[in-house]
Each structure stands twice: as structure tokens, then as C-alpha cells.
Image (cartoon, rainbow, N blue to C red; front, side):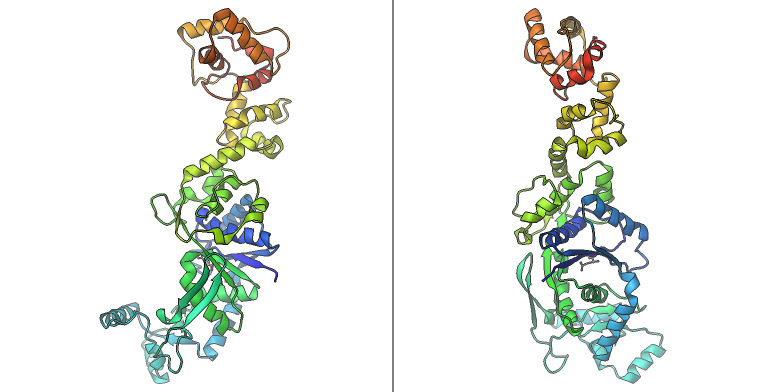
Length: 459
Ligand code: GLU
């Protein structure tokens, strides 16, 4: 069977690492099975959905390396949703209800006091045509509920009805349809809740696998019933655990600091974000993966834990460093140029290889470029004996061209002449040359500075 997955965000804000976990689970699943990936904007909530968010989500996915085969907007598919709703109404499976929220709440409390499950008692099914006409004459508009197939003879006597599926992530699952209320599919104002459009679109778009967060497990029971009511075979389902903050709160599109856009703006590497988004909360150790293609080869959704996983942004820093330290010059040349490094300079590649091991972010290379090409920083200064020592040491720079061997020749000469060794020997030189007390190997920096550049830094 060819695989088609979909990622179905609501474009009501910028997506965060938790949303991207869902997108990547789907993308990796599609890559692994040579399937297709549909990006579907669930934008039926017209009050909150915005095109700019949809555009940002598409840009975030591109940045991560997720390239949808097809992009759809649910808001453009109203005719299909209406046709499905009509089909259900004709079959008596979508029925009008007129209760207000207060009425429903009162009934729920009564049921609870009678030790009955607080589900909707289908009272609206008892309304006659006259009752409905009278309610509508009062100005009431119906909302519409889907009649769950959880009864034998009469809908007023439900019976345990287990809907089962073999979850791609969680293994065998059962949801009892008698434990839930008939879901509202259409609101009073005629707009659809998410359930029906999602099922209709999954059918029409040939979705074979619905992979999403485990907050949808219960929905899946009703949705499988809905697929069947519409004459379709339900797809496979997979529900991954959700990510929370380090203090256990759910991630929200409103917590902008953790949005993918913010992480991108902050200079994180997409593979650092992707590696953590996928591997956190699984039995696979979190490490920096080289590419989504490599990740896909060993991707096993069943290795995902069932409990929520805490997302710690500091782990992202660790992964980012690992990735930056291995990036080739070709991979970063454009970004270095954008950050202010003169990529046409003959030293640019050697420079990158010298500094990358000291960077948290690629753009930090610009500071080192300035130190190498313009002059030392002023983060650390030489004083007293160290200043005198450094002056004397500069006079001992070996003659001739500066190469990667120069540092060891220079320090040997300095050691014999001054008796200094270790940190006392090299730190004043490092500070004189770079204006910093830590950084790339001096041996690698010297050839970049050249003889004149070095001597110009004699304190
Ligand atoms: N728009 C829904 C959400 O963001 C999609 C859920 C699903 O994947 O079915 O929760």
C-alpha cells in the first residue's frame, strides 16, 4: 500500500517544537515508506486563522527540510464538507439539537448525581417536527450531533462498543463509544467543528496514516465511526506523546519564544531542532542527526514513550554545538557571507575550520572574522608582568612564513628564553592576539593573521 500522511495545523499562530514533532513524525514516516506528505491547513475557524500564519508554517517546514507534496486549505473545501453533512443527515446520523450550554450543564449535573456517566442523553432525538418548529420559531438555531453507533435497538440504551485500532505508535487501542457524547459536528452558526472536515478531507486526500498527538486518542474512536458512516475505510492511526515545558506545562502557540520561527531567528540549526523534536521522549538517545533522510532510515514510531516528554531548550544548545562543529565550509559559506564574513577572502575556508569548534551558532563566526581581519577584541586585557612578558615574547616570533607549525616553534623559543610554560606562557599571547582568554587554537589562527598581522598585535 502506498503511504499518504498529512500534517494538519490550524494557522492560528506560529508553530512550536511540539507541532513540529507531529510534522516530522509524519514526514519521516512518509520518507521511510516512500510515501506522500500533505500539508493541510485546518483553517475552518475563520476568526482565528490567518494567511500569514499559514505562510510562516510553510516556511518553517521548508527550513526544517519538510517539503509537502501537496498543500490544501480546508476552508476551500466547504462543498465537500456540506455534501458529507447532507449524506449523514439523510441517513439519520446527524441530528439537530437545540440545548443551550446551560441546559446541557444542568443535565450533566443531574446525571452525575444519579451516578450516570455525564454524556449527552440524546434528548433531541425525541423532539417531534412540531417541537423543532416551535424552538426555531423562538429563534433557536440547531447545532448538529453525530449519532454514535453505540447501541443495538434504541439509541436511548447504549451498550459498550469498543472501537479498536492498532496504533502505529501506541500499539492496540480501544475506545468505548458508549463512554462519550455524540460529538457536535456543526455549530449553531452553521460552521463546522474540526471533526467532520478532517475526516472528509482525509478520505478525499487518500490519507492512509493519521499521525498526531495523543490528545486526539479519544477523538479517534468517534472519527473511525465517522469514516465508516461515510462509507470509507478508516486509515491507520498513530498518536505520539506530547511535549511540555520543563515545568510540565503544555506548549502553546502563544508561547512565542519556543516557536520555530524564534528558534530559526535565534540561529539554531534545523537539524538540531529536528533531532530533538523527534528523539525526545523516545527510547532512542537524543543526538544530533545529520539529515532527515538518515533519521528516516531508523525511524520507529513505536519507540515513542507513552508519557509526556519535557522539552528543555538547553538540550537544543548542546545539539546545535555538535552540528555547528561539524559543518563543512560549503554548507555555511552563504550564511557566513550574510553574517559579515568575506567569503571571497582566500582565508575564509581555513578560517571557518579554525573557528567552528568554538561556536554555539554559525553567525558567531563574524566576531572571530573581525578579530582575525581587523584586530583583537577587548574582552581581556594584559597588565603588569604579563604585559612585559608578552612584549618580549613577540620579539621571539620565528622568522619566515607563518604556518601551522609556527606556534610550536614560537612557544619553544619563548619557553627557553623566559622559563614560562603552560598557561602562563600561552595565555598572555592569546590575549594579545585575540583580546579574549579563550577561543580557537592559536596554532590555527597564526597562519590566518600572517606575519604582519601578528606583529601588529604586539602589545
Ligand atoms: N488541526 C488539528 C489540530 O491541530 C489536527 C488534528 C489532526 O491531526 O487530526 O489539532
